[in-house]
Image (cartoon, rainbow, N blue to C red):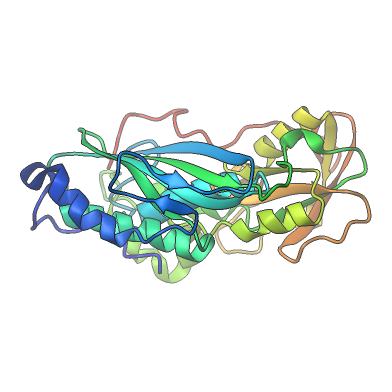
Length: 338
């Protein structure tokens, strides 16, 4: 499902030799068709149907600060590009309907790489958000591999769930795992490297038998997209995609809502090998969903309670205020790619 790690061998047709038309002719048939699409890839623009207000979000993945080709297979990159954007749509309580993908790649990029990336995009949509797929985008040559995705979602006539709706007394709950992706990234930088400290596909592959789950959480996250719709139906008062770390993102909701979140220590204790409490609180890139529900609400099956909203501000654990440090791909980046 998650594809092999590491870059493919460069032996076939490249983007520079074959050109845009040939590349698109190989990519587009691999993307599938969207339920909400009246006109899909191949025209000047896509035409979609919607029942009412539309949710829109965009995100960019850049080779270097956001991913390393030595660690991520093209399929994994496509999957992750889909998952991270679908999760933002789900966090608004919307049903993902379509992705628009703008891709820039070096001239020597093999078309097989682009095909694998397209396969990952399609597979991510099919498994995480059935009925959603890529309906258009752009392809260009650039020195840096960059994947920019715009995701659209349909609220099906319901109001969007915003960060500002939490109230004192609300239950704080989470769907999905936290800490695993951050632990996976820490592991890759510590042990997925060669003798010179450069990212190594071979070193990363050697970690798989012991740390498969946390590596998958980092390289091909399984965002709980359906939980967003379930939260909306259960009356969630606020929600956010945890992309930058639990404390940092919970702090954003607390600030927008004017409340304080008190976390339950027992609910956050790490159980996966290689995962620490620091990863759980600050790791980032898990793309779990954090939501609040009215007091006494029955939580959807994917959610588990991790705390409560009170009058006040910030995020507190064991009586100690926590500060919002978390995932930032550009903080301290040394300009390396790998």
